[in-house]
Structures are given as structure tokens and as C-alpha cells.
Image 1 (cartoon, rainbow, N blue to C red):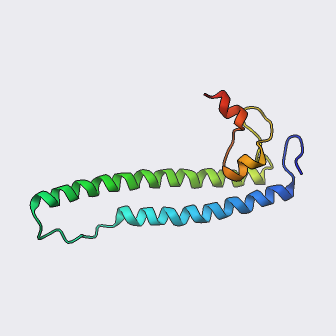
Image 2: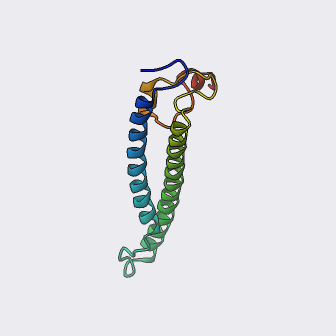
Image 3: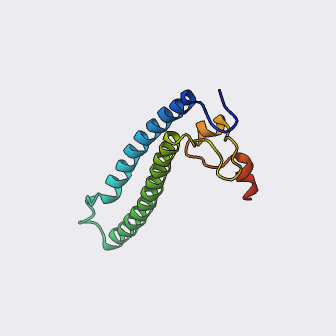
Length: 125
């Protein structure tokens, strides 16, 4: 199933399917996040006390900032997954960029955009 320095075409195809599914889900999640922080809907606080409205506006600003950060992380995740698809096409997918060894298939199933083996990741600590 695994060669010494690359995965077989069949295994690469399996990973490609996993990654494409993750990209589709991540893009749906990103659209949901974007629609949430772009929502300028009013929650009906026009007739409530000014203090409550100030708290709500502060909360809304924090929420938008948090959602913006989530959107940025989601965009990076999607970009990393798309880069993994490129590595599959180049047949370099699953090769650790530090050690040059194959990343375990178990790790790639959990983190399909990984470019470091556990060994290399531990060396960074």
C-alpha cells in the first residue's frame, strides 16, 4: 500500500476524496460565518434603555470580530486543503517537508493538510 517515499495512486485518490469532502464542508461553514458577521439585522433594541443598547452594541462588535477571526481561520484551512490537492496531483502528498519520510496515513486521515510528520512536529517543541 505504501512505498518508501510516496503513497500509491489508489491511496492518493482516497485522500483526495477525503480532502474534497472537507473542502465542501469548510466552504459551507465559511459562508455561514460570513453571513453571521455581515448580518446587520436589528434585534429590536430601539425602544429599550440606552444602557442596554450600548451593551448590545459592544457585544455585537465583539461577536463580529470573533466571527471575522473564525472566517480568516476557515479561509486558511480551505487554502491548506487546496494545497494538499496540489500535492496529490504532484504525487508529493504525505511526504514530510522536514524529514522526507511518509507521514502516517492515520495522521493524514485526521489532518489531511498536514505537511509534517509527528516526528518533525515533536522536533519543533
